[in-house]
Image 1 (cartoon, rainbow, N blue to C red):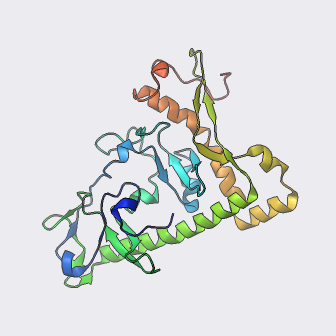
Image 2 (cartoon, rainbow, N blue to C red):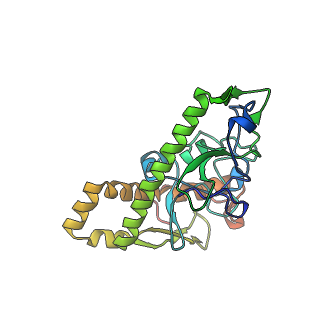
Image 3 (cartoon, one colour):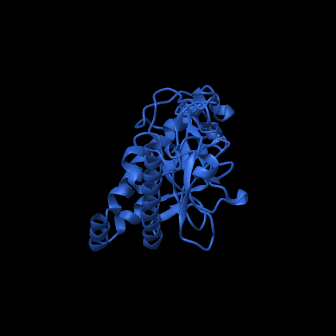
Length: 267
């Protein structure tokens, strides 16, 4: 989850542009509080850090991305371009769910201005619609950052620190050999064929049960085991996301008239 340099070809998810924030160019800039995240309604998964697992698993399934460098994701829809929690206007659908820190820091981010440097600078997305010179809270008082800007910087620094912990967790998880290719089968009541979802990774529960006692103890002491169980518990919500899609008319055509049955009912 390391932030990339502000290169248009490698912009982070949901960011359309990045500019370093400085008093010389942006001394009159103000931040409007009530904003939405452009493109979020067409985003089906958002990165989460390990520090968020406990809160996020109550609202979303937590899965791991495919590929050589998997990252944990909050799953908001089962298909590309589908978000069952955010509408086209960027407003929550139904009861407000947990908002991942990745979204709460938007439109700001810490980024490396020089690829060969470890120094991070506070940047922002000027296309977000969150900035104005007339309306909002000032980001600078003369040439000095306001308390608002200092708090934004502190939050972004905390996110980067959480990102490093998440990278360490993912390294340990890959080393453990517990990650497997994910597959979920959902067969709604009255539908002949189940719907299969793949393209992600998850913990192999069979391998987890086979771990030696000393390995489990080490995972528990490092804080890794609770995170694994938070992920596993959250997977039950995949079924809920499926039916949210169906109810919103965003799901597979065959599931349009399907109704959710209790989780312990026979599929």
